[in-house]
Image (cartoon, rainbow, N blue to C red; front, side, top):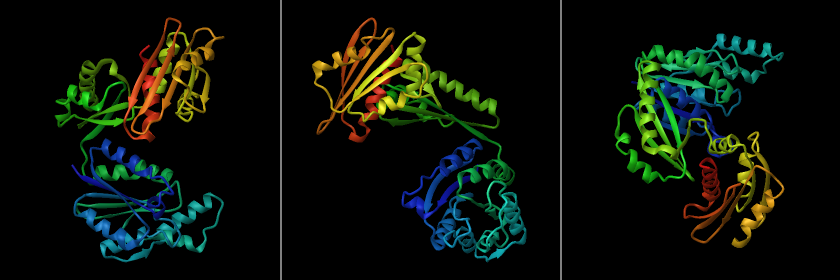
Length: 380
């Protein structure tokens, strides 16, 4: 199985001016093709440093995928950097220039002189036509390695990965395996407890099982590898069922499911709507559920956390004139060493007040409070 490495190029990424979304997209595609990804990195627009990381990468990885630095400006150094890494010249390619001119014609434009920079490629490179943008991509290969340079524009990169690069990798490396992943979402249970319950599954080699803790939520990642999709899905299902048998209602969904959607769907299925009053969360709870249709009807954000005796009255006042409405109050009180959370839940049958304590990073406390409150709603 080949080993891959992703290198994103751009000083704007290092400075935090742009967010790198390319790595995640490429990583998921490589995983599905059964290609191991052991390293990702970001480097600025400097051809010597880019060349160095390419040479280093080729000592440990079979596939290097570069994104960015293929534009027409002087600070787009990827072509020269790859040529430097391979010890060859960067040469003008008439075929690439014709592709660039055609892209501009389709847009009703005429390329400027500096666009000719995009028609250069390392000597011996395999040209990859970019039908979405103007900058051609290219591949430099040896018997055992492939260095693939793609545009940094996500739309262009994504199109090239699907249409050109994945088919190329399948043929070049005789790929026979596919990998699929499934994420199970849990709430109301800590990572250490989950580890105790399913620790033996985390030691499996195929499928593999891993944990990722978030504020008020823990995800369980299942990954399986096989030569065909049906076998992979069967392997995922087998472990999925076993984890469900062990963790039960702690699991609220999988993959793209969100706790907000699951919680509000539970209320809607019971014939209720929801009204929320919150403090200490910066309006985050209301914002997270405001666009979920059919359930949320009212929300109020308090500028300060109220005194404890008042919180039940506040929730009751919010729903006093409404029928078939559940009232939820979420009040987060900051502290020097811990955050204190009070949750009021008023239903047609009962009123409950629960207290919770959070000692983690203060910035994560609102998200923890929201997930704790939503978990109560989904268990009604």
